[in-house]
Image (cartoon, rainbow, N blue to C red; front, side, top):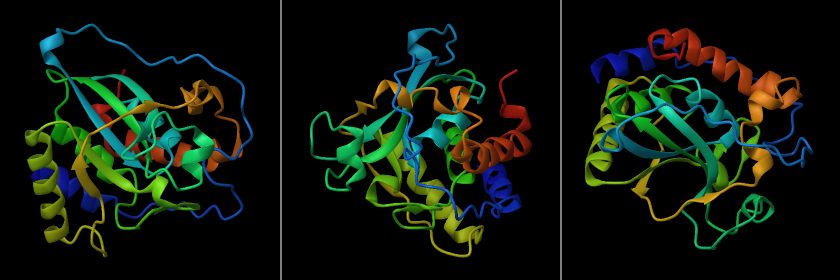
Length: 222
């Protein structure tokens, strides 16, 4: 975990000032697409689940799809009170849901600690309900823990990062119990891989992917 803290210190600043771009999901692509999550074989006892919110789920999906040990990444909505919400409803900020990615991973290849390291390093966890031009409670930074071990690990890691002074401002990441996950509409799945030429993908998502691949070379899928 100390190595993780040091890695976070190394690259806290990322130049991504793209003021002319619309928020996540406003590109107008409404066509249905097939989910193309990378899958690996693994013993079911070695498979676990993590659920993270870090702004636009297109960004989160693109990063974790490229991480070794990650089996599937599914975009969706968690943490709200409305059942089966639509993207339009979530964007209104009235359902209580956050845009999240639910990640299944092989514990023999990657740990929850390592997932957290990448999670905190590839978004700004100090801005409340905002990532860049994407703002609203649906874009909040959040860890929805699935068990007590995940809760303790996330809280400990958050406290250590704050203590280290890696960020100039306190981390505001919400750490709360997982209660629900509703898959997003099909056209959100595998978004960056299928729409990489769109402005939002080029100027917002691509820098996050590049940052991940540069800082976490040993964790990138080959």
